[in-house]
Image 1 (cartoon, rainbow, N blue to C red):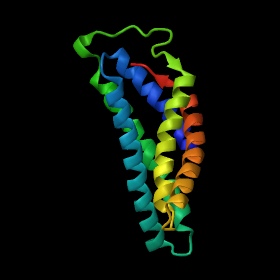
Image 2 (image 1 turned 180 degrees about the horizontal axis):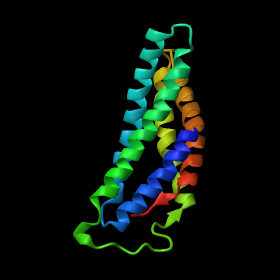
Image 3 (image 1 turned 135 degrees about the vertical axis):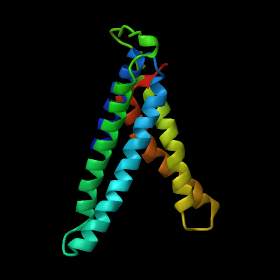
Amino acid sequence: MCEVLVLIVLVGMIGDMARRRGRRPDAYALLLVGCWIGGALTAGLMGFVVAKLLTPSWPALLVAYGFAAVGSTVSAAAVFLLLHLLGPIDDVWREQMRSPVPRSRFAGAMIGGVAFGAIGAAVGAFLHLGPELAGRVLAGAQGFLIAAIFGAWFGMLAGYQKM
């Protein structure tokens, strides 16, 4: 969960950098998130394989998590470096406003709650093992409520960004 909070802060930072350079902040935010996840998965898998091959007595998941943390950090740094090296469009730096992106905590909580809740409802209904419809509906409702609480919390932290 700590990684999600770090990623939320980094997305805001990369968006500010992109705006100052006249570039699309959503494209670089998407690139950052993709590289973060891809770097973590790739390095985590490499760490797991290395731990199993070299030291079978060590806890492989702990080594994999360490590798994943390093992989996500390096890939995020690469995205920041890429944007830094590109520079501004037409060599014109844009002024950074005091609050470049208006944020609404309420809208973020609503959007995050509904989006996460829908995913939670689908997962809950899919994972219900019984054949009866009532059980699937109940499992979907429970999944919706559980996931919606986390989604609303994350949405409230991030705030809905109006671009």
